[in-house]
Amino acid sequence: MFSVRKAVFADVDDIFAITREAFERYAASLGRRVSALDENTADVEKDIAEKTVLVVSFENAVVGSLRLCEKEGWAYLSRFGVSTKARGEGAGAALLKAAAAWAREKNLKGVCLHTASDMRELVRFYYLHGFHVDSTDKSRGYTRALMVMPFK
Image (tube, rainbow, N blue to C red; front, side):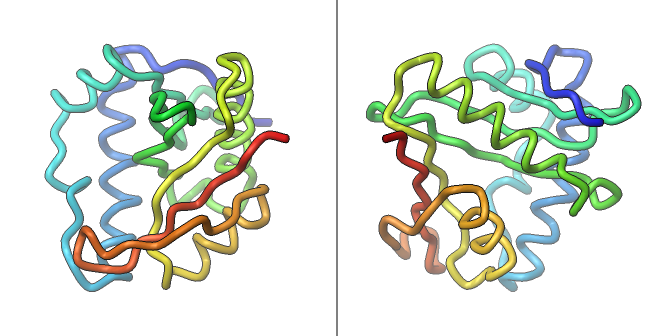
């Protein structure tokens, strides 16, 4: 149904649009602006060049993306977003599975990410896919949970 691959520069506009849509919802839920909304297409291009950016497609259309980098022996996941039309259909799960495979190939400890701790829908989604809350902080002006999926 869904296919996941590494992003290429031709995907920049799709990634930018999906990230903006996802983080506008995120910001609205928080009631505050988030840094992802300050991003432009040049930032997406830079991440494609410097990080591992994955996209998920359905019927040849990009419907989700995430970005990965190595951080202290972990795969750190950021800018995870799925378009509204593909939410709840398995696109996000396919991306998380691919992110975990990437981390395993690199012999990393697992996958981690930050999310707003009071966004129950997101926290629940991550729990359902093998993550748990490791810690919280307020460095961005709201409580963020560090979610981890350690490999055993």
